[in-house]
Length: 148
Image (cartoon, rainbow, N blue to C red; front, side, top):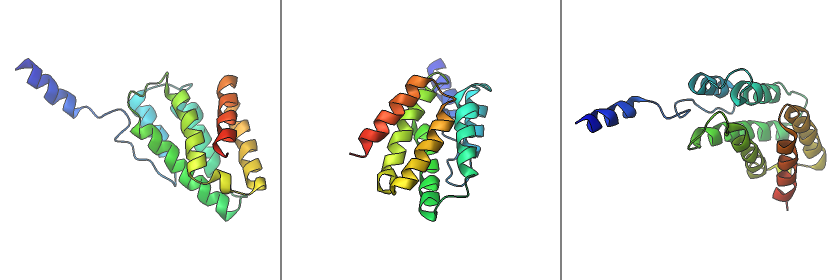
C-alpha cells in the first residue's frame, strides 16, 4: 500500500520543465525553467538561456530569412531542453551546447548565405563568451562539421 501512495504522489509532481511551454516568439520558457529547477542567477536558465534568447529576440537588423531561422531555432532550443531526460542544473549547459548545433543545422543554418552565417557566428561568439571556453570551441567545431 505505501508503494501505491508513493506512485500516486510522484504522478502529481511535474516532470522537470515539461510543463513549461517552448515558444518561437518569446523567452518565457527559460524563466519557467528557472522557477522549476532553481539553478540561481548564475545557472544556465537565467544567465545563458534567458540572456541568449532575449538578445536574439532583440535583433532587428537581419534579413527576413535570418529572422525566420532565429524563430525556428529559438523554439528548437527550448523544446530540446523541454524533452531532455535527467536534466539538472549541472548538465544543462553541456546539453544546451549540443542542442544549439543540432538546432542550428536542422533549421537551415548551412543553407543561409555566407554573410548571414558570419553574422550568426559573430553573434554566437559574443554570447557564448559567458560560457566556459571549452564549450565555445566545441560548439564551433560541431557547427563547422555539421555543414559538411
